[in-house]
Length: 200
Image 1 (cartoon, helix red, strand yellow):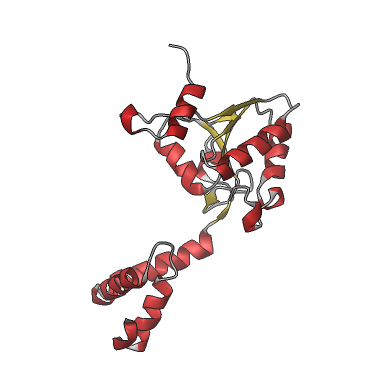
Image 2 (spheres, rainbow, N blue to C red):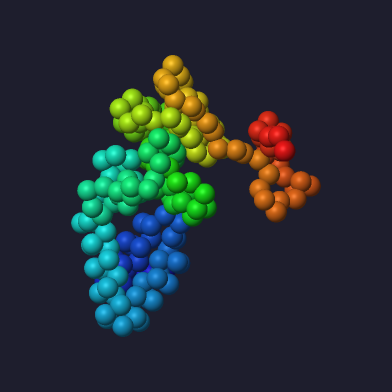
């Protein structure tokens, strides 16, 4: 499809199509948008990409993305350091933060258990989590992995590793979403909603 374009445009389309969820058609539209944008906008985009690659690193405490030694959350002295919310990736952390309901700290695993994909416990940041629980007087660990097979198996492994330590282990509630209609709720979601019911 891209054969009619000049080589620099074809190269840009090829690079853009490497992005997740971006096929050749979308990559072509993006490339043409960049081409027709003012030069200063294209330069700003290129500089932003380079800056992200140069400046973003993993926070040595929680493994969130950071542009300084520690991430914004670990630097925040108002956060409750006695509670750690374990998430699979920075996107999940951002989703919890967006709720504005959690004021503790995080631990980002950067993946979930998936033996078929070669992701075992040694590929996740589990030892670092255990070290934090031991040395930081952590009172509660919230397991906030996705309610998928990988997410559940990861949560079960963490709970097993933390068993015997003086820490409360909780799992995020699963079930019917707010505003949801029970008639359209799938069987698994309904089962989890019943299992994790609470008193009123």
